[in-house]
Amino acid sequence: MAIIQFNKPDLPNIRPLNIRQRAKNGLLVIICGVVGFAGGLLGAQVNKNNLAQTTTAQKQQFISNESQLIAQIAKDVGSSVVSIDTSSETNVTDFFGFVFPQRQSGAGTGFVIRDDGVIMTNRHVVPAGTQKVTVTMSDGTRYNDVQVLGRTAQSNSLDVAFIKIRDLKGKKLPAVTLGDSAKMQVGDRVIAIGNALGQFQNTVTAGIISGHGRDVVASDQSGTVAENLSDLFQTDAAINSGNSGGPLVNINGEVIGINTAIAGGAQNIGFAIPINDVKGLVNGVLSTGQLKQPYLGVRYVSLTDDLAYQNNLDVTRGAYIVPSNDNSGVVSNSPAQKAGLKEKDIITKVNDISIDDKTSLTSALSQFKVGDIVKLTVVRDDKTITVNVTLEEAPNQ
Image (cartoon, rainbow, N blue to C red; front, side, top):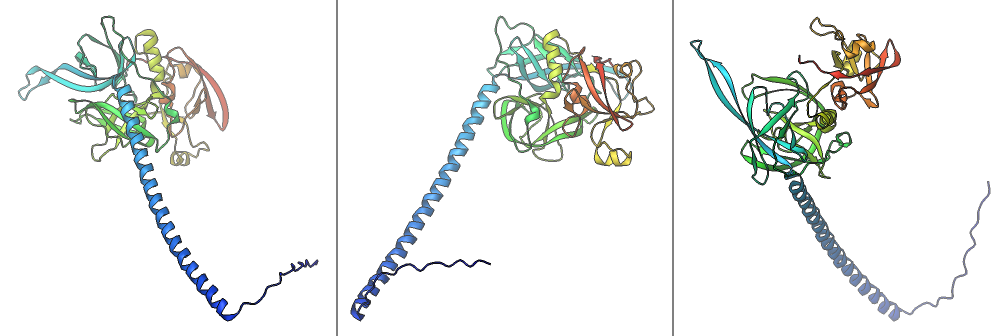
């Protein structure tokens, strides 16, 4: 072992002090120490106060900036948000068996997706049987000549409808910008705009994305109409009755969701359809003027860890094709059957879109339009294969 020796430095010649001089210098040292200590305390207190003031100022500036941002988004997007009033007539049977017509009215929200008056909303805002639709813009302009272009089937998990103002008298409406809902993460800030309670037009609320991939069973206030909704955003931005069909917006002012449901037994738990799930429908409506739903023709369950374990599957995420209510998992004469899909196949991708907790098979397919050829990645008997399918228009049932 090598031992390193440090050379001692040459020490200067120091003359010892006498007692009186030592006392004077000692007192001086004490005074300087006290002054220094007091100065340090004072400086620390000043720095603490400055830090507190700076932190408070920064907080105030942050709050001010966020408030200004929300206000600007509300102003920019709010001009594209509309209030929708509907009226319909249904036959009601009384206690004595007599049938008589009963007129019903409803209210909801929508938003302009093209400047010629095409508007997106929820299916339940303009349900089957709707006879008259009135659209009111944020500036108070009312349009009574409104056509329902189409709505998804009641059995479809996407609660979406499209309407169009027939005559704008040469005017162009401000349209929203659609964002990329796949980029949204839990905790991201969002803003909801809608016709709260059907009477407070363009109400603005703010919150965050609280969760994604939520599946819920929603019903109307009477509880008679129920629908299964899947792959939803959960948000704590307050969504009230009448907000249905309104936009959920990110901090860039882009629409990333369609407000569609609330949890009745809780506060500030709302749900929105991710906008990517309906982009295929949007493209189809804008190009043809009609709502045509792409159709694959399979019955499936979305795999989870538990379902995979119960069925002894190595794959834990995907669409597992299984029979339902004595009906085959692959619908006869459907695009799926024509492409050779089989029961117990697991669809893990549609093109490059993974089927997982965030995206169901229905949601993935909804990003395409009728006539598109999509490549399905399928796990069959522990082997991965690819199957090309041409999507057809969904049948009425």
